[in-house]
Image 1: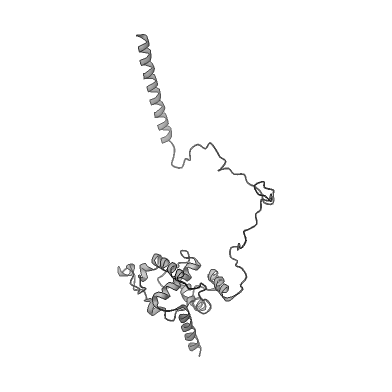
Image 2: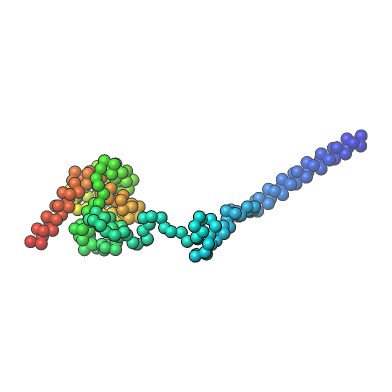
Length: 228
């Protein structure tokens, strides 16, 4: 009889103990803030050993802490030596804001000096189309007629039709407009890399039914006529 009472008592005691423990854990967990990272038991990945410059380092075969940059590394703001006109176009593209100011003079200068340095191919056009659909189609529409969905709502004035706009618009002016923005269009230099800008220029010229070379030639002819 006594054994039964003891067993019953022990069961009740164990039940209350487990319940109390569960409540304590719940209260403790609820007391943490969302910023609390909790307890850390292994800090190896958090507290890595720091090495001073120009000191030995057992983690590398040569024992040096200072590492040599990988081959072809270019310091920020610097570019490799210009060896031909194509490379010069790339240089001027990457350093566009250094060489071409955000005004009429910079716009005209870019139109004269900058030519698309990327070789035209079906792959380049396909990539240009993808970029166009993401960033341009909403205003210029799929065919480049300037009747995009944002224009159709009446929120913005009509956008120029590419077939009329690009007949004598050279590569450099298009690149300048995308880099700095033009009229109501803002700059896309943060969204599009240099290569992406040149690729989408090829695609919009294709939409307009003009070629890069013909647009550049028409612009040069226009400049020569005005000078004469």
